[in-house]
Image (cartoon, rainbow, N blue to C red; front, top):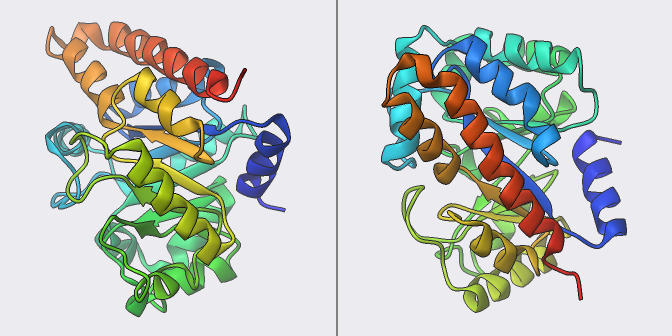
Length: 275
Protein backbone atom coordinates (compact mmCIF):
# COMPACT_ATOMS: atom_id res chain seq x y z
CA UNK A 1 0.00 0.00 0.00
CA UNK A 2 1.36 3.44 -0.91
CA UNK A 3 2.17 6.08 1.69
CA UNK A 4 -0.49 8.30 0.12
CA UNK A 5 -3.27 5.73 0.51
CA UNK A 6 -2.06 4.79 3.99
CA UNK A 7 -2.20 8.45 5.02
CA UNK A 8 -5.65 9.08 3.59
CA UNK A 9 -7.02 5.89 5.16
CA UNK A 10 -5.62 6.87 8.56
CA UNK A 11 -7.02 10.40 8.35
CA UNK A 12 -10.42 9.12 7.21
CA UNK A 13 -10.48 6.94 10.32
CA UNK A 14 -9.71 10.06 12.38
CA UNK A 15 -12.48 11.93 10.56
CA UNK A 16 -10.36 14.79 9.26
CA UNK A 17 -8.73 16.19 6.15
CA UNK A 18 -5.04 16.16 5.30
CA UNK A 19 -2.94 19.32 5.35
CA UNK A 20 -0.54 19.47 2.39
CA UNK A 21 1.89 22.42 2.39
CA UNK A 22 3.85 23.36 -0.73
CA UNK A 23 7.44 24.57 -0.68
CA UNK A 24 9.89 25.11 -3.54
CA UNK A 25 12.93 22.84 -3.49
CA UNK A 26 16.10 24.92 -3.41
CA UNK A 27 14.49 28.17 -2.25
CA UNK A 28 16.60 30.11 -1.34
CA UNK A 29 19.12 27.27 -1.43
CA UNK A 30 19.23 23.53 -0.98
CA UNK A 31 20.29 23.44 2.68
CA UNK A 32 17.66 25.89 3.93
CA UNK A 33 14.84 24.28 1.98
CA UNK A 34 15.94 20.84 3.20
CA UNK A 35 15.76 22.07 6.79
CA UNK A 36 12.24 23.37 6.15
CA UNK A 37 11.23 20.12 4.44
CA UNK A 38 12.44 18.06 7.40
CA UNK A 39 10.59 20.23 9.92
CA UNK A 40 7.22 20.46 8.18
CA UNK A 41 5.83 17.15 9.53
CA UNK A 42 6.46 18.41 13.05
CA UNK A 43 4.45 21.52 12.16
CA UNK A 44 1.45 19.42 11.16
CA UNK A 45 2.03 18.50 7.51
CA UNK A 46 0.36 15.20 6.59
CA UNK A 47 1.91 15.18 3.11
CA UNK A 48 4.33 17.61 1.47
CA UNK A 49 4.24 19.02 -2.04
CA UNK A 50 7.77 19.84 -3.19
CA UNK A 51 8.10 22.17 -6.14
CA UNK A 52 10.52 21.39 -8.98
CA UNK A 53 11.94 24.69 -10.20
CA UNK A 54 11.40 25.47 -13.90
CA UNK A 55 12.13 28.50 -16.06
CA UNK A 56 8.60 28.81 -17.51
CA UNK A 57 6.08 28.01 -14.75
CA UNK A 58 2.92 28.97 -16.64
CA UNK A 59 0.42 27.83 -13.98
CA UNK A 60 2.12 29.61 -11.11
CA UNK A 61 1.47 33.06 -9.75
CA UNK A 62 4.13 35.64 -8.87
CA UNK A 63 5.02 34.18 -5.46
CA UNK A 64 5.82 30.68 -6.66
CA UNK A 65 7.44 31.96 -9.86
CA UNK A 66 9.79 34.06 -7.71
CA UNK A 67 10.53 31.07 -5.48
CA UNK A 68 11.44 29.00 -8.51
CA UNK A 69 13.74 31.69 -9.82
CA UNK A 70 15.49 31.94 -6.45
CA UNK A 71 15.96 28.17 -6.49
CA UNK A 72 17.35 28.15 -10.03
CA UNK A 73 19.69 31.02 -9.18
CA UNK A 74 21.03 28.98 -6.26
CA UNK A 75 21.80 26.11 -8.64
CA UNK A 76 18.89 23.82 -7.82
CA UNK A 77 18.39 20.91 -10.22
CA UNK A 78 16.04 17.95 -10.39
CA UNK A 79 18.88 15.71 -9.22
CA UNK A 80 19.41 17.93 -6.17
CA UNK A 81 15.67 17.83 -5.50
CA UNK A 82 15.77 14.03 -5.49
CA UNK A 83 18.77 14.21 -3.16
CA UNK A 84 16.63 16.35 -0.83
CA UNK A 85 13.91 13.70 -0.81
CA UNK A 86 16.52 11.03 -0.11
CA UNK A 87 17.90 13.04 2.82
CA UNK A 88 14.36 13.59 4.15
CA UNK A 89 13.64 9.86 3.95
CA UNK A 90 16.66 9.12 6.14
CA UNK A 91 14.63 10.49 9.06
CA UNK A 92 11.01 10.13 7.91
CA UNK A 93 9.66 7.05 6.18
CA UNK A 94 6.01 7.93 6.74
CA UNK A 95 5.16 11.36 5.28
CA UNK A 96 4.26 11.22 1.56
CA UNK A 97 6.31 13.46 -0.74
CA UNK A 98 4.75 14.76 -3.95
CA UNK A 99 6.83 16.44 -6.65
CA UNK A 100 4.96 19.22 -8.43
CA UNK A 101 6.27 20.74 -11.62
CA UNK A 102 6.36 20.79 -15.39
CA UNK A 103 7.25 18.02 -17.80
CA UNK A 104 10.41 19.54 -19.27
CA UNK A 105 12.77 18.81 -16.31
CA UNK A 106 11.55 15.20 -16.10
CA UNK A 107 11.88 14.75 -19.85
CA UNK A 108 15.38 16.26 -19.86
CA UNK A 109 16.43 13.94 -17.02
CA UNK A 110 15.11 10.94 -18.98
CA UNK A 111 11.77 9.48 -17.94
CA UNK A 112 13.02 5.97 -17.21
CA UNK A 113 16.04 7.20 -15.26
CA UNK A 114 13.97 9.77 -13.39
CA UNK A 115 11.32 7.28 -12.29
CA UNK A 116 13.98 4.83 -11.13
CA UNK A 117 15.80 7.51 -9.14
CA UNK A 118 12.57 9.05 -7.80
CA UNK A 119 11.29 5.72 -6.54
CA UNK A 120 14.64 4.94 -4.92
CA UNK A 121 14.74 8.39 -3.30
CA UNK A 122 11.29 7.96 -1.79
CA UNK A 123 9.00 10.06 -4.00
CA UNK A 124 5.36 8.99 -3.66
CA UNK A 125 3.52 11.03 -6.27
CA UNK A 126 3.86 13.39 -9.22
CA UNK A 127 1.77 16.43 -10.10
CA UNK A 128 2.72 17.56 -13.61
CA UNK A 129 0.57 20.49 -14.61
CA UNK A 130 1.29 20.59 -18.35
CA UNK A 131 0.67 16.95 -19.32
CA UNK A 132 -2.97 16.39 -20.34
CA UNK A 133 -4.57 12.91 -20.36
CA UNK A 134 -3.88 12.61 -24.08
CA UNK A 135 -0.17 12.40 -23.16
CA UNK A 136 -0.51 9.73 -20.47
CA UNK A 137 2.01 7.50 -22.21
CA UNK A 138 4.74 10.13 -21.68
CA UNK A 139 4.91 9.97 -17.87
CA UNK A 140 1.61 9.04 -16.21
CA UNK A 141 1.49 5.38 -17.20
CA UNK A 142 5.23 4.78 -16.73
CA UNK A 143 5.02 6.42 -13.29
CA UNK A 144 2.16 4.18 -12.22
CA UNK A 145 4.04 1.14 -13.50
CA UNK A 146 7.00 2.24 -11.37
CA UNK A 147 4.80 2.47 -8.27
CA UNK A 148 4.56 6.27 -8.17
CA UNK A 149 1.10 7.85 -8.07
CA UNK A 150 0.23 10.30 -10.83
CA UNK A 151 -2.06 13.00 -9.48
CA UNK A 152 -4.18 14.84 -12.00
CA UNK A 153 -5.59 18.35 -11.73
CA UNK A 154 -9.28 19.10 -12.25
CA UNK A 155 -10.51 22.68 -12.55
CA UNK A 156 -13.80 24.62 -12.49
CA UNK A 157 -13.87 24.24 -16.29
CA UNK A 158 -13.56 20.42 -16.21
CA UNK A 159 -17.08 19.47 -17.31
CA UNK A 160 -18.85 16.11 -17.21
CA UNK A 161 -17.70 15.27 -20.73
CA UNK A 162 -14.04 15.86 -19.92
CA UNK A 163 -13.91 14.53 -16.35
CA UNK A 164 -13.78 10.78 -17.18
CA UNK A 165 -10.65 11.33 -19.28
CA UNK A 166 -9.02 13.42 -16.56
CA UNK A 167 -9.50 10.80 -13.83
CA UNK A 168 -9.07 7.65 -15.93
CA UNK A 169 -5.40 7.02 -15.09
CA UNK A 170 -5.18 9.21 -12.00
CA UNK A 171 -4.02 7.59 -8.77
CA UNK A 172 -3.41 8.67 -5.19
CA UNK A 173 -5.90 11.52 -5.25
CA UNK A 174 -7.35 14.18 -7.53
CA UNK A 175 -6.21 17.76 -7.03
CA UNK A 176 -9.09 20.21 -7.48
CA UNK A 177 -8.01 23.71 -8.48
CA UNK A 178 -10.51 25.99 -6.77
CA UNK A 179 -9.99 28.83 -9.25
CA UNK A 180 -9.72 29.22 -13.00
CA UNK A 181 -6.24 30.68 -13.35
CA UNK A 182 -2.82 30.74 -11.72
CA UNK A 183 -1.77 29.97 -8.16
CA UNK A 184 -2.12 32.64 -5.52
CA UNK A 185 -5.47 34.11 -6.59
CA UNK A 186 -8.47 34.07 -4.25
CA UNK A 187 -10.01 30.64 -3.75
CA UNK A 188 -13.48 29.81 -5.01
CA UNK A 189 -16.62 29.89 -2.90
CA UNK A 190 -17.15 26.98 -0.53
CA UNK A 191 -20.47 25.78 -1.95
CA UNK A 192 -19.21 25.74 -5.53
CA UNK A 193 -16.03 23.96 -4.48
CA UNK A 194 -17.96 21.44 -2.38
CA UNK A 195 -20.26 20.61 -5.29
CA UNK A 196 -17.38 20.22 -7.73
CA UNK A 197 -15.41 18.02 -5.37
CA UNK A 198 -18.36 15.71 -4.78
CA UNK A 199 -18.72 15.30 -8.54
CA UNK A 200 -15.00 14.55 -8.95
CA UNK A 201 -14.97 12.08 -6.08
CA UNK A 202 -17.94 10.21 -7.54
CA UNK A 203 -16.26 10.01 -10.94
CA UNK A 204 -12.81 8.97 -9.67
CA UNK A 205 -13.43 6.97 -6.52
CA UNK A 206 -10.37 8.75 -5.08
CA UNK A 207 -9.79 11.30 -2.33
CA UNK A 208 -10.00 14.89 -3.56
CA UNK A 209 -7.72 17.70 -2.40
CA UNK A 210 -8.44 21.39 -2.92
CA UNK A 211 -5.77 24.00 -3.54
CA UNK A 212 -4.79 27.20 -5.37
CA UNK A 213 -5.74 30.35 -3.51
CA UNK A 214 -6.05 28.91 0.01
CA UNK A 215 -4.25 31.71 1.81
CA UNK A 216 -5.48 31.66 5.41
CA UNK A 217 -6.15 29.23 8.21
CA UNK A 218 -9.81 30.28 8.08
CA UNK A 219 -10.14 29.35 4.40
CA UNK A 220 -8.30 26.08 5.03
CA UNK A 221 -10.75 25.28 7.86
CA UNK A 222 -13.70 26.08 5.59
CA UNK A 223 -12.53 23.65 2.89
CA UNK A 224 -11.34 21.00 5.34
CA UNK A 225 -14.91 20.61 6.55
CA UNK A 226 -15.68 18.65 3.37
CA UNK A 227 -12.44 18.08 1.42
CA UNK A 228 -10.15 15.09 1.84
CA UNK A 229 -7.12 17.39 1.81
CA UNK A 230 -6.25 21.08 1.66
CA UNK A 231 -3.13 22.31 -0.16
CA UNK A 232 -1.53 25.61 0.81
CA UNK A 233 1.33 27.02 -1.23
CA UNK A 234 1.48 30.71 -2.07
CA UNK A 235 0.73 31.87 1.48
CA UNK A 236 3.68 29.88 2.83
CA UNK A 237 5.98 30.96 -0.01
CA UNK A 238 4.96 34.62 0.49
CA UNK A 239 5.73 34.35 4.20
CA UNK A 240 9.17 32.94 3.41
CA UNK A 241 9.86 35.60 0.77
CA UNK A 242 8.95 38.42 3.16
CA UNK A 243 11.67 37.25 5.56
CA UNK A 244 14.21 36.81 2.77
CA UNK A 245 13.63 40.36 1.56
CA UNK A 246 15.24 41.55 4.77
CA UNK A 247 18.44 39.83 3.60
CA UNK A 248 19.94 36.36 3.21
CA UNK A 249 20.73 36.25 6.93
CA UNK A 250 16.99 36.14 7.58
CA UNK A 251 16.60 32.62 6.13
CA UNK A 252 16.29 31.10 9.62
CA UNK A 253 13.57 33.60 10.47
CA UNK A 254 11.85 32.65 7.22
CA UNK A 255 11.89 28.97 8.12
CA UNK A 256 10.41 29.72 11.54
CA UNK A 257 7.76 32.01 10.05
CA UNK A 258 6.68 29.33 7.56
CA UNK A 259 6.54 26.71 10.31
CA UNK A 260 4.45 29.01 12.50
CA UNK A 261 1.92 29.60 9.71
CA UNK A 262 1.91 25.89 8.88
CA UNK A 263 1.07 25.08 12.51
CA UNK A 264 -1.85 27.52 12.45
CA UNK A 265 -3.20 26.04 9.22
CA UNK A 266 -2.69 22.46 10.41
CA UNK A 267 -4.62 23.21 13.59
CA UNK A 268 -7.45 24.77 11.59
CA UNK A 269 -7.62 21.74 9.30
CA UNK A 270 -7.65 19.34 12.26
CA UNK A 271 -10.41 21.32 14.00
CA UNK A 272 -12.64 21.75 10.93
CA UNK A 273 -14.96 18.80 11.64
CA UNK A 274 -15.05 18.99 15.41
CA UNK A 275 -18.38 19.67 17.07
